[in-house]
Length: 155
Image (tube, rainbow, N blue to C red; front, top):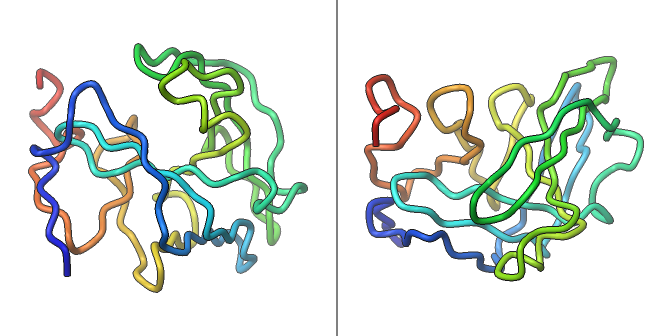
């Protein structure tokens, strides 16, 4: 297992393609399944994974109100996610027109792991990044502490 220390991740963040299979399950339905994903690595954060929209069940994504701004990636817009009789509000996001350094994210979507039934990197079910704001996926090879835990807002 390749151990990664999130405090060794760069700032500004780095975008990289991932060879692992990424899957998202909601309401017992696999709504996303890809081997063409990306991850963003940023100091003190577990990776945030982005999946191409073409590998996401189209009916699962419903545009939601609001947006946010990331100094590195640009303006994010949100989706509700619907599948298997469940409807979760603002639990996925995209950068339709990301900054030049993150241009590959155009057309990709990230999911908060916590509200989903399960999210996977290969066959490992991830745990969500602590806190309610950040969308990182924690795998067993990561060493923290992770931003988002109690007492980390000043980091």
